[in-house]
Length: 280
Image (cartoon, rainbow, N blue to C red; front, side, top):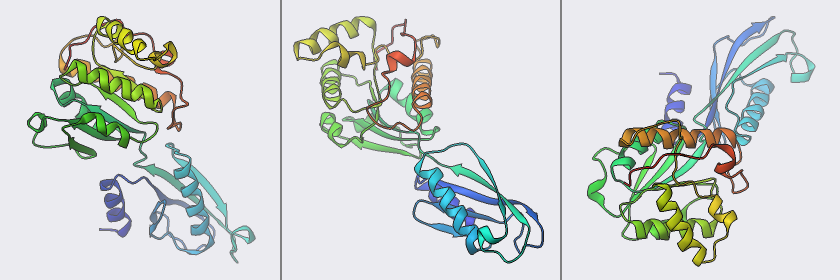
């Protein structure tokens, strides 16, 4: 196996983004081989496209792409002359392909029917998932790659460990716990997305109780309940999970690169949900 290929597999298994760089065209009498590849991460380089100043410039470009969260491929043409410290003429065209860029850090509270349908969908996306529940027996035997199972007797305490800009989904089996989790998330108020499973009736009840605790309309508007895309109908766990995953995808696409609390509230990005949801 080529060194770059094994390095790419290792980085993807660790959930670390990188850029695959390929020489796709050689012009002139340069010593490089078309098709040569290297992998560049934020902290390392793996394999080579021939070394020298060209490789140095390629590493700079790749790390700029990683720092900016760029997802699209990029072509760059380098004239091999004085600008690259080369003594010979010609040119090299490089293809830059971002790999494994994480779009969202997601916390799912609840391992019930909808949670078990939702988490594998999220795991198949460019996301990292914390899956939290107090009931170990509710988790499946096989946890998808990219998902961290957290069994906690006090799920509320896990909110303190969430990163800024986290996508939060609350769907536990316990309405009082849902309320406490909601209050804690709104108090932190640094999430990129917060969805609460339930009907419009549940939202009205929660809003009343949260206002009694001092939360204003601006804070309550950041709560998506019912959550999920209204266009996806149905009350089966898989149908609800698909609608929630669709809403998360729409949110991180709309807010691409903005992994903080300054993103637009989901209510401004998506139409209001018109359907009820089964509780988990």
